[in-house]
Image 1: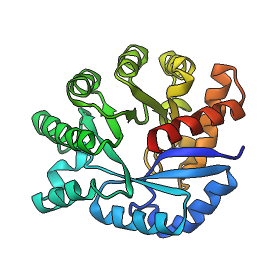
Image 2: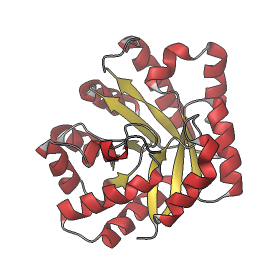
Image 3: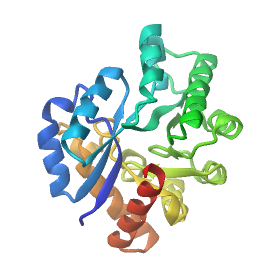
Image 4: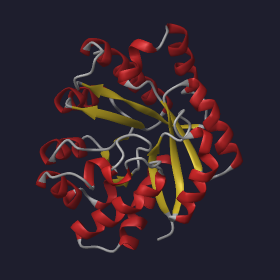
Amino acid sequence: MRGMIDSHAHLCGKELFPGWREIAQQARQAGIEKIMIICRTVEEAKRAFDLAGQDSMFDVAAGLHPNDILDTPFEEWARFMDLFRDPRVKAVGEIGIDYSFYETVVPQVLQKEVFIRQIDLANELNKPVIVHMRHAAEDTRRYIKCHLKAPGIMHGYSGGGKAMGEFLELGMYISFSPAAILESEQDDARSVAAKVPLDRILVESNAPFRAPTSMTGKVHGPETVAGVMDYISRVRGISVEDLSRAVYANYKRLFS
């Protein structure tokens, strides 16, 4: 299937960037036409700008991930805020809220402050946001409702059907990754994939993070989007071609 879109891949991170040419070639062979490169540092964004300048396959998004807040000095934060204004940055993200249990926990009040500051700048620039949410559906919904004016994407969505309805009411798009869909044992995950409106659905690899267990020991790249597309088309009872056309139209609507 040609014309597929990967709306979220960390192609310029240290894991994938050294082999980006081979990864891009594999993605094309799998039928992927466009990849949104997600950048978590200014240096990653510089790499992504270079790739996008060489190949129209690539778009660029940048944002301060909630798990990176404590490791980001003030000077880097200021550079990030300037970076968002660059016209080559198509979206602000991934940003968001993460209440998972980690060895180093970012205080919730600090996550809230950084999330809202980035939302405010996205509003000012009229750029979409790409939202990371883990174990934080209620707070994420509250902050989006109170602050977000631009459209946005719930990336790698795994928040369940009730929360999905609330995010849809707030104008958000719902993006599905391999980890959230292909290996979920929850009926709710399948239900969400079946019920999200066709004009609000996106797909992603989230490469190289949270790779399917079937790829253990291998490079998890954008080509895994093909499996997500196949799964969603089956649970919805539509063709992969129809799903691909819908995803393509949604992506273009958001990032044109």
